Amino acid sequence: MFEWWEVLRSILGKGLAEIVALTAIALAGLIANFFRKYIYGWYDYSRRLKRALASVSRVEAASGLREGDGLWLTKPIEDAKSDAFIAALHASKVLIVANAKGGVGKTTTAANVAARLAELLPKSVLLIDLDFQGTLSAMAAGPEGNWVPAAGTDSLATHLISGDLKPADIINMSKPVASANNLKIITSFYDLAQAENRVMVEWLLGDRKEDIRFRLAKLLHSTLIRQNFSLVVIDCPPRLTTASIQALAAGTHLLIPTVMDLPSGEAVITFARQVQNFKGAGVCPHIKMIGVVGSLQPPVGDIAPAMMRINDRLNDVRDSETGQKVVDILDPKTFFPTSTYFRNAVSNGGIAYVAMGNERGEREVKEKIIALADHVKREMNL
Ligand SMILES: Nc1ncnc2c1ncn2[C@@H]1O[C@H](COP(=O)(O)OP(=O)(O)O)[C@@H](O)[C@H]1O
Ligand SMILES: [Mg+2]
Image (cartoon, rainbow, N blue to C red; front, top):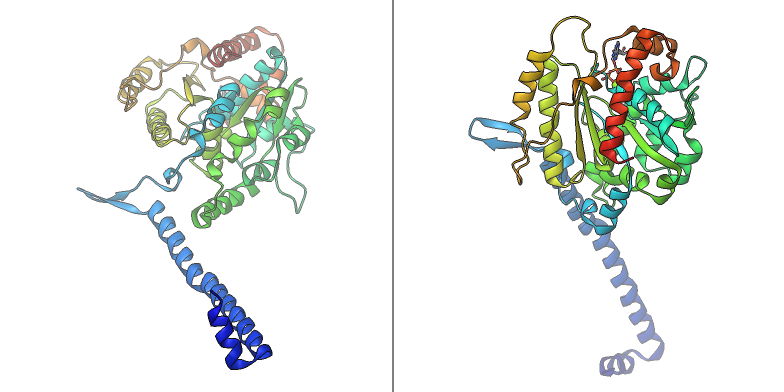
């Protein structure tokens, strides 16, 4: 077996043979390192670039080029399939308040439903603001509060979607909501926009092991969060941003607020279809639609025709496997009316449900909030 070694020694003599052998080993190491660094590096780079371009590319259709499925549906999606993930999700209570349109009452709905449920539930309710405009954060901070991150620091929402926080950090760093018991918030600010782009580019080019779509899910489905909060309510921005995708993947239930008019209805239908795509692809296969809830109801005028049109169009959004309609419009008794109480609370920095007194007008608005919160409580089995 070592014949070649004996031959080498007999030719070169004892010392020289060892030197030649060691040099040969060192050279082999250098060549291997060169191969790993340059040849494999080049191969890995082109593979990642190809994957990145494929996940954002347009596709050929009969009518010409059209937008493809997009970055967030990039396969493989493995995380949501594991038994451990499904068990933790089913034990968790995470309400997502979202819609593709802005100014339709998402933040108002999230804040007021959370404030009411915080009154009813045994443990705290955690609000998470994922819209960098920070409307919910300002509401929760109250008139004296300051939700704006100190100069040179980032908002909590940025740390949350970046994967910097552990469940214990969420418990320690979330801030109590002014004048509401049992309600805490993770605040957001404009730095979140940049963080969302960064995380998206990292995901696009990184090709790393961690699937960033499930970062928030893994945090919020942890035992520690379940032990400390009865419910998590996430207020989403009106776009399918990095934060929204993380929210959908973390959500157990989805509530879609809308104004009951036709343009807003189109946003609901588009959004419901998008959620169906995400469900089908495995980003949020287990999320349950609570329904579409009216907001900013006009004091005069009939919403029934718009509601019927929206309902008709929602009939076309069906589950590809079961053929079932995926989302319904809730009972109008849960719809929030247009009311100065909501607007005043925001201008004064506060949540209407907490700020309102007991005058007749206030009681009427409160009843709607209570009706919607009760419905959510039943649907989520809280
Ligand atoms: N029911 C309501 N009555 C009066 N004003 C409302 C009502 N709901 C929301 N608003 C106001 O409308 C604007 C948009 O509401 P918001 O809840 O922030 O919507 P979104 O989160 O969908 O953008 C805010 O200025 C808010 O104060
Ligand atoms: Mg909002």
